[in-house]
Length: 239
Image 1 (cartoon, rainbow, N blue to C red):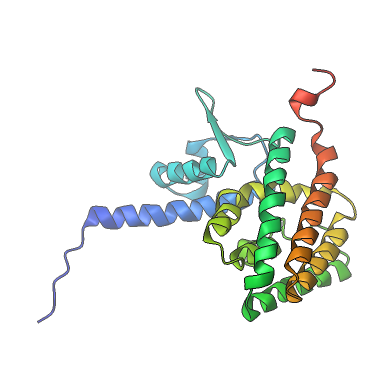
Image 2: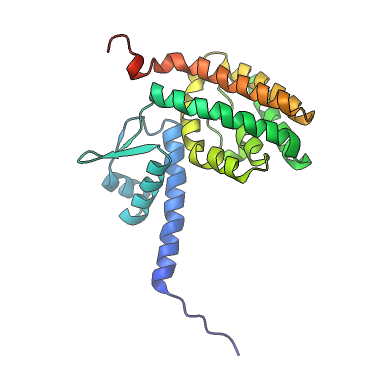
């Protein structure tokens, strides 16, 4: 006798809205990071709902997720806006990034398996091929997490908390700032060389060198981008 399954229409609708919200979150994240939606732009719910052909409920959930990832900010009576780049926030994020990614590289040099090492080599090969074709964009900035050199290292660290911080809480903000590095001539080529040094240290299981090379890489990225953002407001000589 076949078992009769009682399907709750409301539960099914909630699941569908949740999946749609996640899809919208991903699409809006990419649009912001790639510059299709300008930094500081106002986000109108009615306009976005018409543009994507969705109801307001999953759209609001997507915007809530973007706010949690600090890609969108809300203010009373002003609604939702894409964040603007902040020199102070950039300094804070990259300070945390240097420590966390340095630790991730050290851990990955010990824990990374052969499959992840091959994946890291494949990503670096793609970056080197892009440079050989004449491109000089900063690598990873506009790629998804599955093609991100840094995300592979974080996931291979064997530390779930660290992975959650780098690939969850900080990931979208990091990508937003890293995407600006394409404006710095020569940074793409330099970054790929730095990636090669990190990979070599990990492949040699030299944890100390892997951490040092990663910290050096993050510091170089900070130094390349900082002039574009200017000093933090508290350090503005004209304030």
